[in-house]
Length: 148
Image (cartoon, rainbow, N blue to C red; front, side, top):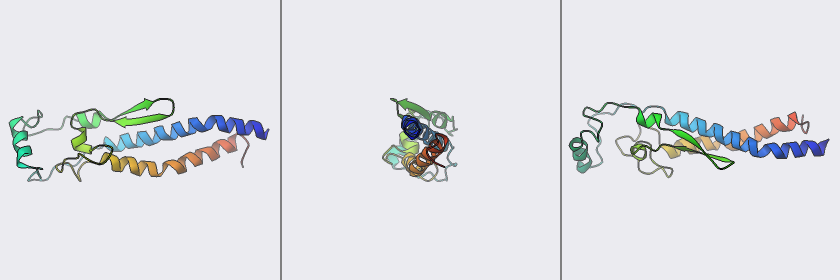
């Protein structure tokens, strides 16, 4: 009976890990979809070149005055990777400048402090992952009769 319980537990461990990674991905996605606060004025341009480019391109194509389209917040997706993993992605051109990249780089100072930095959100959610996985393993062990 113990042997069968261990075999059942061993079979469920990959599913437990995958589920917890998916749930963490959902939390990252939800946090990244939160709109940033409105900018303060004057705008903290990174350079005079950036300011000129903004006005020369009609607000980088978004119009002046700029009004939010929600394209950035709506573009956060969870994609499955193989059998065990997931990734949270945003494929808009502006994503790197609004939320930074996986290394915490690229966020424009215009958006810093107003929009969450992707790397910080991911690291924050990953902190709780090992405890959630072990908690789920304990639940499965109780269900299979290996633990009380």
